[in-house]
Length: 499
Image 1: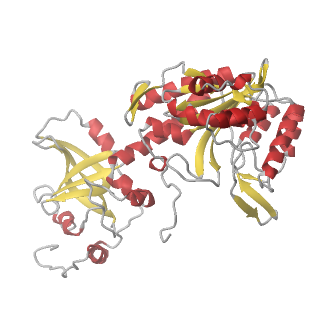
Image 2: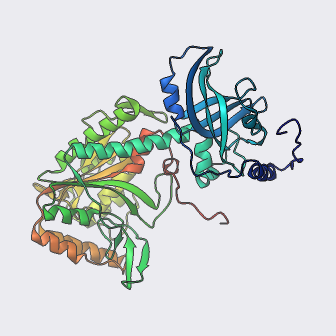
Image 3: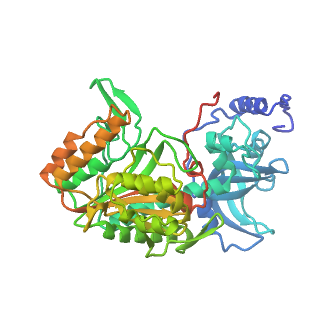
């Protein structure tokens, strides 16, 4: 009922049809139900902060204008809670304070509609911060019902497919993505404060490289050229270092790998990659520890925090774990004493490990490490002493030519980062990349090519440097207590609905 003399037509029993009918009535009554112009004087969060000390049962003469989505309605709309990104505020509409024109809208407002309200600020006897509505404006009529607020979306797949509803009805999801934004901006501020310059490198590559992964392929019509979505920005960032533009360069980037999907893998993912001239992997370890500590403080107010049932500490220094030494401790296999690939394969098979017939000494070592040691790395740890034959871009460990100055940072048995003392010997670099290319072709990756432009840049001379790649998504998972990567990616990859 809109007033004492006008009776509205009976509404359908179907919730969606009811909303469509109300939209038609609103168009007749007020015209534009989706106005282009509306200006708040403050957000709900700003309102709550400004009047946090307002005592109960006190009404001010302050007139404010707020807006938000209706989440609850009681007593035929006399009490409504509206939410914006900053919080909620209660709207009170009563004949003593609210004009009839505004109250006529109440029966046409549904949960999920977005409204604007102007009125005076008060705190009720029960302590609820409220606005005595003097005017109500319809800003957006929602044509679909919202999920039940207090339970949100119980269907996990629906949460990922309709993330807008998940965030709308789940405060934990909303907080998680707010924290993700805080973490990414925190990484950027940390790097800038440490003297690094941010750059942007291409996402479309004519030659893919910088990592070993299956790429996504596309085609450039104008150039008549097959191209690949980048699997890593490494080779372009190193060319930036060669240029002398800066001695400390970084990029927060999206990478794409046409591989499996799991709780820790998404086909497109975020990395922070950096290169630091005249530094080595020891300097990078320190950088990682300082960054992780600062991010934990920003999110938790402490370097100590909980992930699922584990108490984790991002307080440096992190434990250092030698790959061959840890394998020896876990299995008794002394890879340092093994001289040939054949000896390594035989020892691994003798210990019950299923290794391939063409695996190298380093591949056998890395495989056994992944099987026996990696699952034990719960607290943050830097794994060092990587085999050279699986690390084509790292410098050798002095006195140990089969090992390189590379580390990976682990936590909760997850790899979070990968870093090198970067190889800058152009002849050695070309040799290793050619070997890597031959291995790729042997595996059937016939499209894999040598990046001659990168090698030409290295021939020009790249300073000694430390390099690092951090998996931002996994880091966010840890810091937000999220067991699945799909919980911290707004719109994760998924199958088509009909599949």
